[in-house]
Length: 476
Image (tube, rainbow, N blue to C red; front, side, top):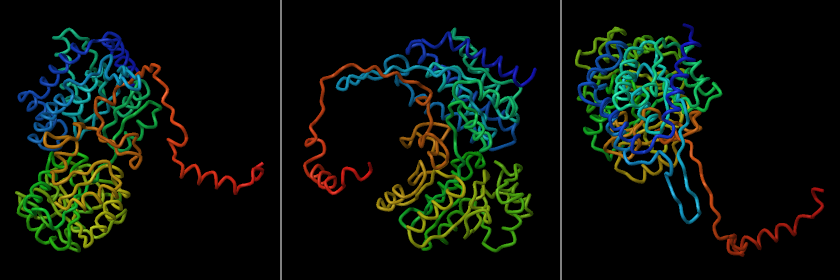
């Protein structure tokens, strides 16, 4: 079977199932979604799928993957009770009623770095919004993708819904994913930059992610021990497979040494600037200024150190590399997808803001950053000046940036990066982005104000004075 034949059949099956589900009622939809959400985050299945994902891909950590499957509970908590069928809003004063409509068949690209959560989460989004979905995994994660799909399909069968509302490509490939993108109604693109770019170029409406490269600003007002622990949790979560992992720290000069000591106490191994180990690690991690060695992705710090000939202790949790440059000649300023943390210093807070913008302009445009500070003025200045879509404050970035029980961000595995990162959205993509909305407008009493009421006498006088100074025939 060719890629085209495989995708044609998968989309046809999904579309036939969608035709049966398109006008399902809210009560039935929510009953289905509650069952699917629990079926996928149920502890026994969460561990099974985490172990399968690790065995198949060799990436990350089993315990981290178990924890990620628990994110489906948060996702359902945020979805529950939100209308997605029929009338979803009545705004009486302007006379607008909104009706939610499904998109159709969603094409979902599933990354090898998050093959356990992504298919489950995207399927739950699709079902909540009365869509069908075709899951296109990375070829190295075909088994785990098929297992997640079968788990959901079993729920669909048990509740007498069309099981082809969720279809997994059985023979995934780059070519199959590209074919799917051209045949579906909407693409959810989570994965590497080349595949996301291909999705945007497919001619099909697309929600895509941007490259991550999150940096945490640390100042003198925070609790350094607590901050070091949060950075370690973020840096080591699933061996830094996620785009929200801390890639580096921008530390205030006055607390730099104390912070480094606190990070060492959390299992960090320091590689000072100019030390031969830094050159060895760089040569191991990159074959070129922007070409990350795939063999280091989501591996343990001890393994990566060994690959570079660095005798780091076996209990090392993450490697720390001191750096003072940003850009192509300084690859440690890039996204690393591994438990390697880059350390920078700053002396003025404005300098820290400029460094975030310079780093993300080079790699990670629009994605996110973090700040560990209790100075609200600094937090506000950062929010006003930095070109990212998300800023987490005093949190473990990787565990909070895509939504958490401890903050108000929406639960997601697809983080929009705004126009900075070539994305159409600058927020966490959720089920709400999988809806079309029809607005019904009814006539209301006219409410047009006079020019004086709307613009004010001062504006009218100023414009009248301006126009009298411009000859009427000047541009004739």
